[in-house]
Image (cartoon, rainbow, N blue to C red; front, side, top):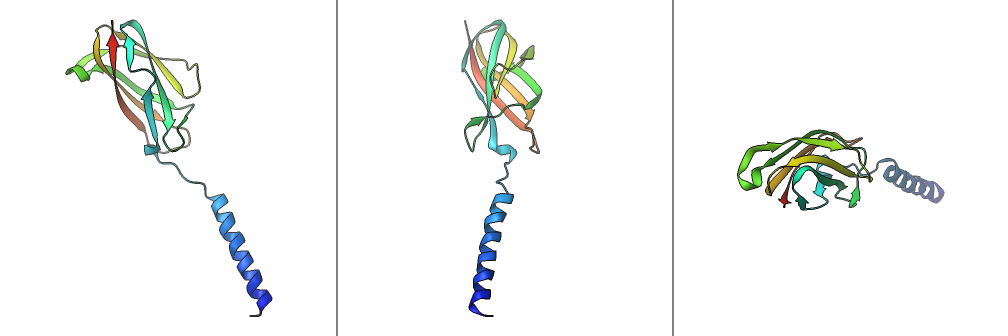
Length: 135
């Protein structure tokens, strides 16, 4: 092999390495996503609004268009897990923010449990978030 052939082979190898980095983007795992409460204290009542943000932990950016298929609110933080309240998902008003209307009839500790699918990802994001209902 002469010098020109070695030079061309090295250049081709470098181009191949560069292109392989472009073609294979970093893949996310379902553990890279989490729900976060927008507020940790919410005024109690039959139309209390609980808002959460779905975040990509790698970038800190909000994730839109998740499909929330499971939601539950209960008083587990105060030792009353069987004390549940009706909850209803509301339309989103901001990208990556998911809102719920709940009947928080008592002041105290509440837990919001969510299950969601993120578009393009395999698996389920599941989080349990504790907050306070205040008078």
